[in-house]
Every structure is written in structure tokens, then in C-alpha cells.
Length: 358
Ligand code: ADE
Ligand code: ZN
View 1 (cartoon, rainbow, N blue to C red):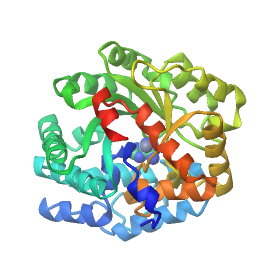
View 2: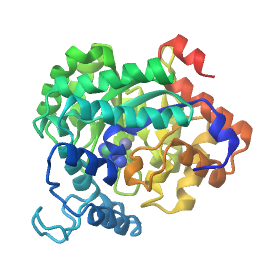
View 3: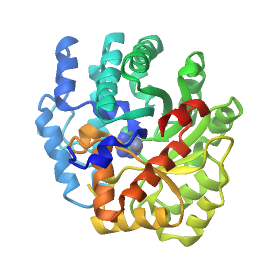
View 4: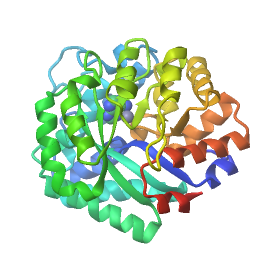
């Protein structure tokens, strides 16, 4: 926990949190026990030990690579898992509507404690339908949690449905169509998972359809030398998306910064980036990360500081991410207030909700 009183007191919007990324080993264990599931990776300690080995390596390819590890079978508890294997493998513990409700409420209670007043939460339906969960169970549980959080905790929310970019675009389209009955819960469509050789333009058709149907669109562009600026260019310019998730590589390119600045705001929402510092410092040099955040901030680019996958990042949430930004970018209290206002500026909440936050 951060002791910084300003950071604790600021009304916050969280725009980059994967709901499945709060599945800590303890929470996974709880769901697995309730559902009588033998975890495929029985030694959760081993999973998380392997994650910290990667985090020490400063090598994003090693951290994210799907082919890392000893090559042993999935049943070997001594196997070393990549981030995505550990992450998506964990979905197997969620089975019932109650599980999805509990998962949502687990986050909403944390959010209320941190004075998060509005959030847009990513979820990956393909990871859930693969394990045999129906849309009714998944969305039904999320909906109950969302309504209770608004009613009882004063935390408003909406959902951003992400496509797995390492799965085929046809599968993304099928999931898009299946989500339409739940469109009142979903404000935007995003793109996540393993990015290498999977540019956002592969999904141009489904994103164009989503935009035409009135959804906001966004995509992850991860941080590090193996992720090309062309992915950012595609999001910002070619596909004209409404937001860029991560995108910190832009800071090293004046042309890319200029292209982001050239993006005007649509009615009520400015173009901006979601930035998750704890996620980057696991595999990028600390100095580069905070120098780049400062560069974007000083260039006038709007950012929402967020937490990505807290259970996989040493239990760090939005307050811890704001804290490291304040400390290592050297932001003043006034600059922290600007950051908080910028996050409200780029969120996709209705105007009256935005006005009620700050
Ligand atoms: N899905 C969940 N967490 C992710 C991350 N950090 N990067 C890409 N896709 C993700
Ligand atoms: Zn993310």
C-alpha cells in the first residue's frame, strides 16, 4: 500500500485492468476447490516462481514467449510456464455464474477502497468459451456484480471485450456477434494476448464492424524492442482507434508522438493511452520506463495510469502504479491532479458520469 495521501484521496478511473488478471493463486485455489477442479498446474507456487524468474531477466521475449520452458508436458508441475500460459491456463477454475459474480465483486471491493469511481474492465471471452463456459454464465455473473457495485459501492463500470490476437480473426468475429445480446454492458472492443507477428490490422474487418455498430475500439501495443512502431501507427492512424493500450514505445519517436497529438477527441472523449508501469518494469529498465512516461506527459499526451494484471505483478493496483509514477517521474501534486483529470478526459463514460467524478 502507498502511504501517499494525495494518491489515496484522488478520485480515480481505471481503464486498463483485465478482470482475469486479479486471479491470484489464493483466489484460483478458492474457485478450484469450490468447483472440485484439480488444477492442471498443481503447484501454483511453481507457476509464480517461474513468473518472477522471467521478471528478473529483462527480456520481454522470454517473459512472453509461448515456447519457453523445459518442453515438458502440461502435467509436469516442474514445468516453466510463460506469462500467457499461466494466465490463460488459470481461466479453467471459473465455471459458474457465481464465480463470475465473485470475481467481479472481488475487484469492485478493492476499487471502492482505492476511490476508483469508474472503470472499464477488459475481459477475454475466447478464453472462457474455450473452457466450455456459456455467455449467459459469464455475462450474467459480471452483470450482477456490476449492478451491485454501482448500487452499493458507488463504483460505476463498463466492459471492454478483447479479442485474442493470436487466435484467428474469424474466431474474433464469431465472438463479436455472440456478444451483441450483451451490448448494453460493453462500451468498447480491444485486442490483447501474444503480440509478436500479430499486428492490429489483421483484425481490421471486425474492428470496422464494431465501430460502425457504435463501440469504441482500442488495442494493446506492448512495450519493448520486439514490438514495432508499425503496430502503434496502425492503431493511431490507419485503423483510427479511440485509444492505445500501453504504446509507450511511442515516446522514443517524435513522429509517433506527433501522430498521437494530431488525434482530436471525439465528442466527449479525448484520445489517450493507458499506461501500466508495474507491467513494464518487470521486463524493461526502470529509467527508460519513467523517462518515456515523462516524455509523453510533457508532450501533452493524455494517459490513464492503470494496473493491467495485479495478481501477476506483485499485487500492485492503481494506487501502487500512481505511486511509482509520482516518485520516479518526479511529478508534483499538481501534475498528479492533471494525470487524474486526463484519465477522466479519455474515459468512455457518459458525460454526466464524467462530470461527477472530479
Ligand atoms: N492479457 C492479459 N494481460 C495481458 C497483457 N499484459 N498483455 C497482453 N495481453 C494480456
Ligand atoms: Zn493489458
